[in-house]
Length: 339
Image 1 (cartoon, rainbow, N blue to C red):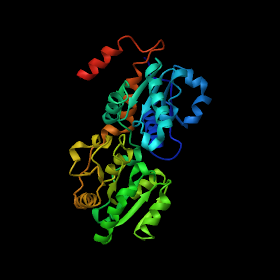
Image 2: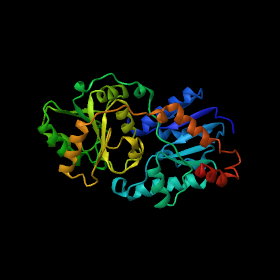
Image 3: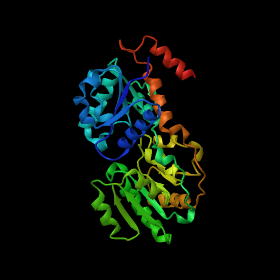
Image 4: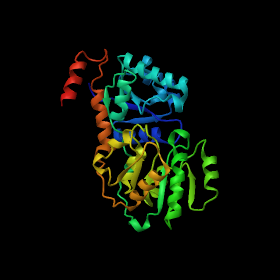
């Protein structure tokens, strides 16, 4: 199968992980001299001609994967797995249904961004995962920072401010650390339903800065002055923010679960520090102390370069046939697994 003439990528509804994924992947296809376009999920059905055109590769995020019954040559993305507690049963079943559509139609394939996500989708929801491809890192984060440890004074969080992210559960430990560490500051980047409650909790502490939504260049500059990046999401699909933080020389403190563990296994206990799943306040504080005291070593992120990730999508796309998934598909999977 020849390379597509164009790639159409759906992003998220707002600035965040899905948008970073789409923009990074678009950079990768541009580097391969393949035109690409990033659109919002709600626009996909307005692009009927592209949706039906087998010369156009469609890479569809979770909220756009209801398109497979109408699409030809589509790769549907599972950036994580559905959660009833965070999304409600109606949306969870809708997402699960969209993944089943991707399995059912010959013009679509289903790709997960981590083995962690793939295993859950296969074993709990009995879905077929056609490939696992890690998230891309945008090129601006591949520029190594020139910042000494003395100029790093922040513990930083980047993401949505909602209950599923668990910032409300780790913020008390972060505040304890502020009391114990002169000169340390906290930077919270993002917005959401919990912002007012979190601001109320810190009670105007001038060492806790709420930055709201920031553009990628601003996030990069803030990470360059960050000592420890922290996350509280135990079911993170992979975590582009983990990649961005490591690329800028931060230590990363994350729950001992999720696809983020796959990012840099050799760095666990060095640049990557694991939080207890209980998020117990004293235990979290102890882990953050270790992260602050750690010596950061450069982490190779070449596997997450946008061009390399785009090439991985082209390898998956090569399985597409205008008359359906080719007959040797199962044998192809067996050879991949053996390799």
